[in-house]
Image (cartoon, rainbow, N blue to C red; front, side):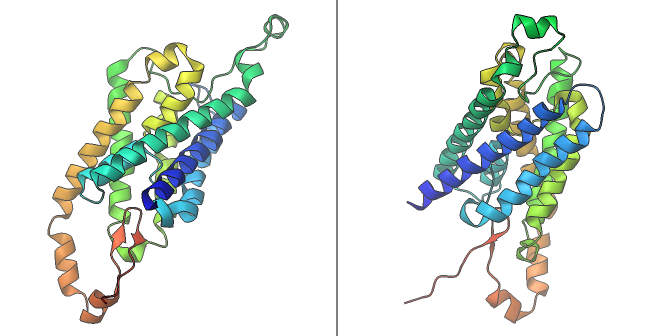
Length: 267
């Protein structure tokens, strides 16, 4: 039952991310040309993370991203059985978000002949695109780097229980940061579920190229988990040894996005 609740929370969180993040990009007409819409779209994605972290973070850890869940699995902070349920729920949430956007913006996605004659252009669906239209390798590299930065920030801020109160803000701001830089190149994915949902409804190049925005974030997540594990190995143990005995005995351990695990009483 607990895993079901976590899965539902992950589905809802991913749905909200796609709806408000990609929806903002559609409303503002975010394109491949730098303009103020970049910042607003980046903020929308970041603010969703902040809102969801403090809404469902105490339930599921608020991953709402298969790349985050994979990093937690590689880091040993998540079980394999949980990982499968989380990822399935995240993709379902992404698809539901894409379907909702498709329904809301259907007319803009499929303008009538009269609209086309009047100069109305078909809008996107907040989907990602290859850098320069066809540069697969550059797009893969960019997305790997963006995801690496995002994931390593998550692993760092959630490594200490004392950061629990600010973890959601730090993670949200980091997502905003990678979007500000990455929107120009690929639209910024760093999240396979966020990319897949809108792409299956947009179709065309968005769907045929969506594999890039599934593979690259997963690779970036694994690299970030491995690098962070190497860099932090031994550091945490030293800090724990230096901590006061009272602090060590009373402080709960962090779980996923900095959510404290409650101690079980011995009977």
